[in-house]
Amino acid sequence: MYHAPGPVFLADCPARLAIEIIAEKWAVIVLFALSLQPQRPGDLAQLIGGISHKVLTQTLRRLQAYGLVARHAYAEAPPRVEYSLTPLGQTLVEPIKVLTDWARDNGEAIVDFQERDKP
Image (cartoon, rainbow, N blue to C red; front, side, top):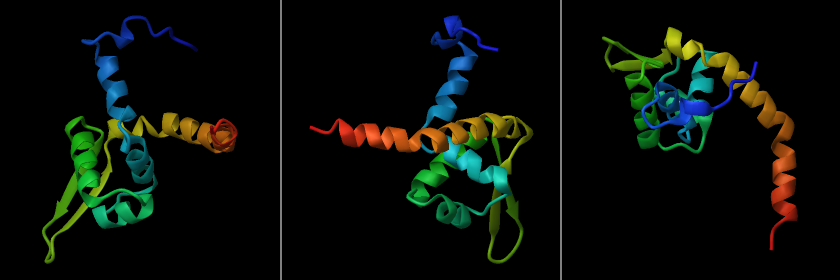
């Protein structure tokens, strides 16, 4: 079922905030990686690749602040921290899967278009 954008994209609409959160460069990738299993930050950075620890930390904090990711600190020596999806974050797994399937199916066409249209 398609819903027209209409007032959803007005500045004060909660749906716009939700779109802005997941449209952030690393958000969907981090959420997808966490959909596999809870992850420690170092393991998450290695799994994703190309993301600095600083940017990963900022992204995780932002997603945590919006209730999409949970941080679990374990009282161990050395300290251990894991991140996982919250129930709200879990609601994004299926939409991200659809987007991932689209990217897998159409990524090559996008690369071909870019190569073809270079000056």
